[in-house]
Amino acid sequence: MTDTTEELTNQTLFSNQEPLLQGGGSSSNPVEELTPEQIAAQKKKKKLFTLAGGFGIVLLILVIVLAALSPKRQLVKLQASPTPSPVTQANKTEMQARLDELNDDLTAADPSKLDLSIPPVDMNLTLDPIPRQN
Image 1: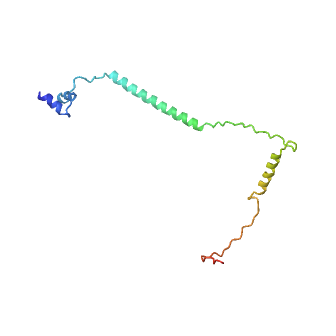
Image 2: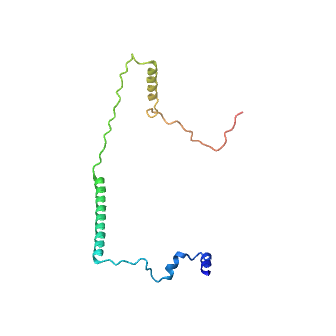
Image 3: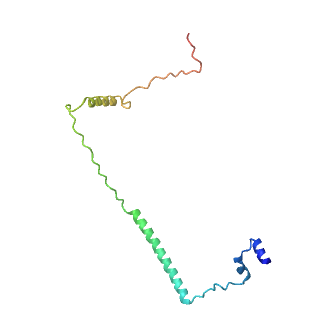
């Protein structure tokens, strides 16, 4: 009765650990000894898996190198350019005439095409206040 109360109060000792601590060896799972033929078969399998893995890695590297060195295929994008309809004076509306006039004014007022001189700058700067004239 003291064992069960000790098991209930001592939470560091678990019942499934007792057979491991008491027995010298575990007799429930005996280690199977392999025959030389089984050992040779296991070594052969390991060697086969190693070779297959190495071959797979070499094949993967080869595919990546070939993909990197292959000429790039470029798609040619065909774009249809709209053909402008001929505009004559007869079918020009008042709005289109005004737009053309404004467009001409805009190109004429382009500051990058105008030759303007640099404006004069007053180089006599002083820190004295300007006297007021009353």
